[in-house]
Image (cartoon, rainbow, N blue to C red; front, side):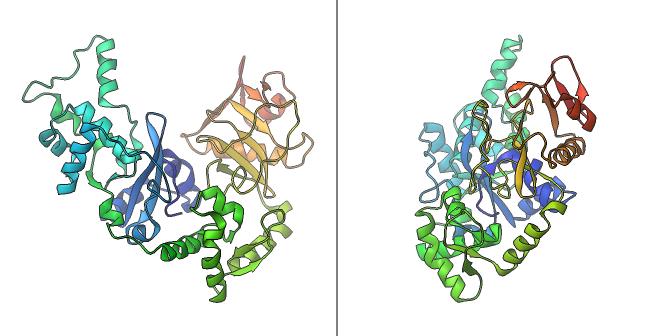
Amino acid sequence: MQGLALPADVWERDVLPRRVGAYSPVWLDQLCASGEVVWVGAGALGRNSGRVALYFREDAAALGNPAHPPRGGVERPAGETHELLRERLTQSPCFFTDFLAQVPAAPEEIQEALWDLVWAGEATNDAFAPLRAPRLTLARAQKASMARGGRGTRAGTRFGSRRGTGAAAQVQGRWALTTSIFGEAVVDPSARRRTIAELMLERYGIVTREHVLAEGVPGGFSSLYDSLSTLETLGVCRRGYFVEGLGGAQFALPGAVERLRTQAERADETPPVVLAATDPAQPFGASLPWPKRRDDITAKPARAQGAYVVLAGAEPVLYVERGGRGLQVLVQRNDPRLIPSLEALTAFITADRKHKLSLERVDGEPVVGSDLESLLIEVGFRAGPRKLTLSA
């Protein structure tokens, strides 16, 4: 999944634990500290978060920066403090306390500008901790303190709060320009297309036109077609029509084709699985369309941060809206996959304290008094006056 830009908190909350089982954040901390794995911002999401791509350092230059053309188009920050930070980082990587000592700007301005550079794909850090911390900026924190009757920061004193701000989780670690990762040299475009083609085969197993368009690869499917054809000639992949309803030209790893056939034969035996809506293994809303719903249901599923999808038999059965207040049932009420999917959702939520549901709506209607209320209570939800709740 190198170079894939996902919301920062989705990586450790949903994506990595689903693939390695008993995931520990210490693992990613160690990989980042050793320099083996690096992260790069790829666009802000609101005021406190953004998308992040992970790379093995040795592969980053070949894949390119996800926020820079032609792979991206994030606007380059152009303020005075941004330029001062660039000048300082051009000299060498540094800690946040170095910025405080060497950049003539207020701490809150430095932090604001630094995160602007992060989401623009210009700055990164050798620690993953800043991405876990709520990015409540120093400026907003000071305003909140003043609103509560506090005195704010003691920026004018020798031993004031300027030193303390450097220990905040959102600025820990050593900051550097991403040019130290991607280099200054221009990579041969054909070599980069070949690398991206190989990476997408490893990521999806089967690559179609829809996959390439969903990832926003510059030039679309046609730009990778020659590279995929070359890989076919070398015996790395095969060309065929593997997934009905998608583009006619499809390329697949041999092992992926066999696994797909086996899964299709055992679809009724496969237990439901819960995935984040933004997970690349969740194809609906990206390479596959969401199932059609009744015309009177206005709420539509989307690949939104914080939303979840329950898949059963390779089809979406349930969609949990962002925030956990709404549930959409994507199959008929008498579908035999509905109850196992609700049980899978219950097991997923109760297994981790990071997840919680407070359902107020089902298909846009109040959950209390709905035709699913008794079934939801039966699988583990707790009844309330206006909502049904579920937590670890």
